[in-house]
Length: 258
Length: 293
Image (cartoon, rainbow over all chains, first blue to last red; front, side):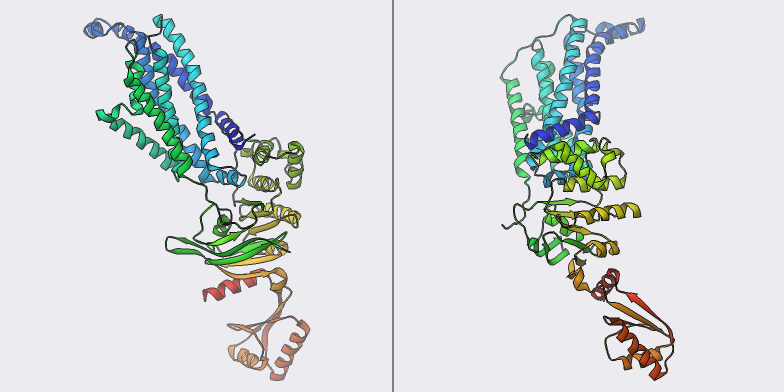
């Protein structure tokens, strides 16, 4: 077995035994359940508040399955992302600070294998949790709204890609950081930096944040080249990040003589 | 014995501060080398540069590409979520170990005395047991050179004895470099001593060359005038400190006779005369003291 797969198994074991997988599944499952429920129940709750709120409740349109997606998108891009940064960003840098990476290095592990195994293990954990939660989300949406909207698979994939971009990003930042604090602060700086850049129309369509707009924007509407430009630019961004992490930080080699 | 690792003119600068200054030494195959020095002497820096864990400023580290070197930091860190046996298996797998993993693990834990902890999670182990696990994971692949940075610093006296006994068992099987402040242990186990202070080597000798068999006659006088008369009459090397004279000798009987002869001849009175065996601590204090003067 190559070192990459040995490390991947180690990193997955760490995520399982430290209960990070469980936290991710429970958190996403709760939001998957809550999003369609909140969308369906909120107008009814307002109506039940009495006649004095009639003016407001009459203005609220009938809830649709798109509202469930909007609620899910909001939860994932805010709470889930922040919890993911808090949970995943210290992992890689902590290994370097504590000295466990030195042990790996002495036992023949390359820096590239180390970074890739961390990214892959976190992507696997997120993918698994996302799959479970999406089954729950689809079930609740169909139960409460009878059917799924058009382009719902594309919408869910946009949210998935958004999270993948950030998982790769926080690991690369962690890879270049000297402390867990620097790693976490760096991840938040990028998050708020992207949020700030959305104000500029010219760059907005290339940013990961735009994916979350499409997660609700494309539902029951038309899909065109604009959406694919955003998807491609984010995939390219992930590849660039990986190249930076894999090739810009190199293992030092001492002068040895035979 | 042939050299397995050599360090040549190693210098390390942190900005404008020189923490290692032209350090050169050789490690012979199968030897146990003690790296001594006060805090901040550059011991850990030297070890980490050998392991390529920090970059050097100038100098060269020579060792064969096939030479396997393992470093164990003073407080070893592990993947605490693993059991002892899982962690050792992980280390063997990283090294593409081809033999019987189970028997290899059993053989290693028996050597370090961790049989009872095999199925325990690492996070439940005490400091002493973690140190043993660190040594187990370092020796499981039979390295050619084992570098131990302050291996007993966090241990109680019993733990210290156990770790040094373990190092004693490994003697001859691999080259071992270790740093410690417990000089009596270094004296007991090491074949060679390297004394570092402020980034420079003060002493680089084998234990047999340090002449630890020498004896010191310590004579305490009542007053400085008596001491001066004695020292004028002695005419050989001696060390004077306040009202005390120290005479280092290989031939104790001859020196004792000479001392009493002078005292009798000159009618000198002394406060006390006692005998001391030279140990590494004396050499350490003397060398570091000389450098600081």
